[in-house]
Amino acid sequence: MQEDDSEGKNVTAAADLTRDRQKRERETWTKVLASLAETRDKRLFAELFGHFGPRIKAYIIRLGLPAASAEEVTQEAMLSVWRKAHMFNASKASASTWIYTLARNLCIDRMRKEKAVEYELPEDEVDPSPRHDGEHAILEQRMKTALGTLPEAQAQVLFLSYYEGKSHSEIAEQLGIPLGSVKSRLRLAFDKLKTHWEAQ
Amino acid sequence: MMKIRHHFDDATLIAYSSGSLPQGMAVLVGSHLHWCEECRERASQADRIGGELLEAIEPVAMEPDALASIMAMLDEPEPKLRSLSTERLDSARTGLPLPLASMLGKPLDQLEWRRIGYGVQQYDLKLEGPGATRLLRIAPGVSVPHHTHRGNELTLILRGSYSDELGRFCVGDVADVDTEVKHQPIVDTDEECICLIATDAPLKFTGLMGRLAQPFIGL
Ligand SMILES: [Zn+2]
Image 1 (cartoon, rainbow over the protein chains, first blue to last red):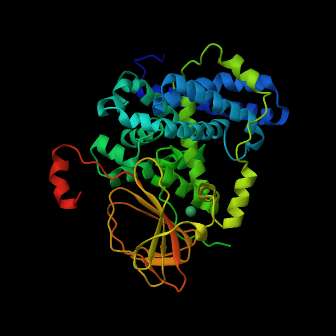
Image 2: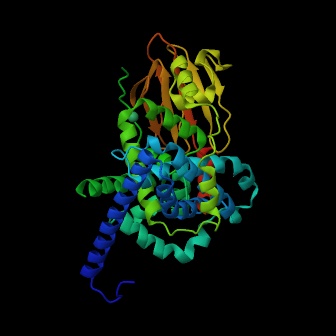
Image 3: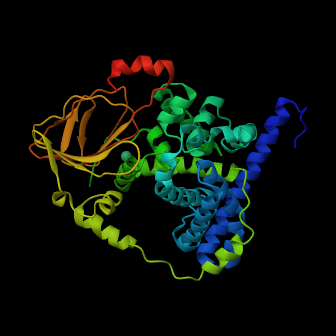
């Protein structure tokens, strides 16, 4: 942990350092995936699995699948990383973005199949948000570091979209704001991130 | 070459990228992306948000034997589902964008259209989940009844064109509208217009506000 009593400046500097480290890591994993595509070296795949497997699993659990299904979908996703590695283009996307899209698509397919069951549940069991309350603050911080410095309200709508798979209407209802405000927050957040990425 | 003038809202591309669209809307977005490089570029930026969040997430440990069991699967032959090249063929044969072509499995003219009014035919894709997804086939000069929306409505033009309060929409164009928009499209050439329309869940109103509001919006 960082010292709790550091001044605002130090906190910002620490966040910058974390961001730099994350950027370097991202580039490293992109290189690993690109060379897996060329060499088909299973040791490289095992490295990618060690890094991305537990992250994909965490992401899928957040979207609402039970841990056992999340484990299976993660295996499927990593297997398609292996099988589709030749289609990865490092000039177009980073490894984490490319793997994210594979995992997302497989997760959507699986959720569609399991959806019928979910509709049967009473409403208070469907809503997954209460169980995230404890870790919420930490996640928010990690996410902010990852996404640059977005205002709280904008980070929140991205969080609900990507980490909880909520639709615009569901977000509007949960936050008690109009649908139009959800959309404009998303647009603003997206613009800020694009500017932030261009500056990097 | 198709000249596309109407595109998706960034908010819609974010919903697509975050996996939070109902199936029909996702097929519609994927279909436009198949044709539109501009939206494809923006969608990949939105995917990057997902990538960054995947890096930042608190990992959850895999089962102890996970690595061993996946390493054992690497040499297994890939199961052959429908190959991508078959789907490409469908897409080329029907002139439809790939996600829609593989979902319909046949050309537009061979679908079982159902007449729902003067000059208007419908084909319901009957997808699971909230909202509705259908194809509308509208005769020249006919206009679709005036309507407003609950939630979001996406339209992708597949044949012909129409005009409404928002402008003129031709093949490849999308209309991306929500509750605030009232419109009345009219087919504006002597060619019929076929479009794919997908909506999401009707807005749910809960609590006192909802009970007060519902009688006025005719739920
Ligand atoms: Zn477009």
